[in-house]
Length: 387
Ligand SMILES: Nc1ncnc2c1ncn2[C@@H]1O[C@H](COP(=O)(O)OP(=O)(O)OP(=O)(O)O)[C@@H](O)[C@H]1O
Ligand SMILES: [Mg+2]
Image (cartoon, rainbow, N blue to C red; front, side, top):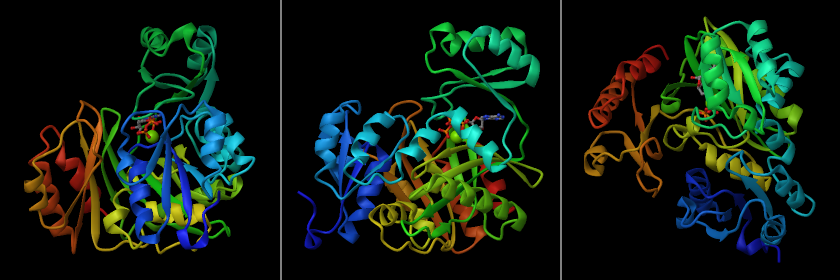
């Protein structure tokens, strides 16, 4: 049974984490109903979407679930492409399984960057210890070694500065037991990390959010802020590369492209074929947020304006929820909690700040930071001071 017009569009989301939750919430005012396929119990998305509990590998149940919706999307990369391909035979999957296939494998990502002439780190793909040694000789130390698949928040990665560390990295990442293969890349110096969040509609229309500067700690994103009054050439490079990627993959929906910035030059790191943590600030700091724009793209509706509203940033809540009353009392603070059990290293919410000027934003950032011990606020403030 397909959705009737009066019922509005129905979107299936593969994955019911916080991204699924925020997508489903963004759909409510537009009468876009979201339904989730998720193997876990009580996923964060359950507050706003009907959830079917089933393993991602169960293509039969996934197809039956998908046949009840108008279009299917996904909120993370580590799902079997076979499941999406099986769904795509009868129900539109947006972004297409092709976007997923590329983004869930670091080697395919690097090959695509190369094909499109997008600068990236020098790299080698390896599947045994001898190849890893040869790659190290070729690329030179220091190196970052990553599993080709299943990495997130810096997991599935190791740094090797010399031969001894190369061996520990090999063992840490599974050694000969590793089935997924490794990608070795040069470790590069960078002045900042930035991401481009863009969206492509079904008609091919593309809209770009402002470039976002990101601060990571222990491999986990902590802080993001849009670059306002950007250094034009950097923004242009990001938009150009992202447009090429969107068009080459025939991508429909939001695409996030992460870059390292070195002296005004961008080096592509990786892509995510979905709404992205570094785009959460758009919920309160852009005209139409990434979640709504992704849904609009998935159902084939016109895209919304992506321009910034006020001076905004996002602060992730990792392994800790500060006193809610204290956060809400901060001028410009918008609190987003994911309904997840608090655990060390786990993203459990974020605070978006939107203020009328940089001085007000800085004050609000400092106020939030007093509740987040261990964070290096000076690094955050640097991102907004030269925006
Ligand atoms: N080649 C490199 N040179 C220097 N730093 C790197 C390199 N590769 C990764 N890093 C650092 O490690 C972080 C995580 O790497 P990457 O984005 O590739 O993996 P990830 O686990 O998918 O992360 P996330 O899920 O947060 O996007 C980067 O944001 C960057 O700080
Ligand atoms: Mg990354």
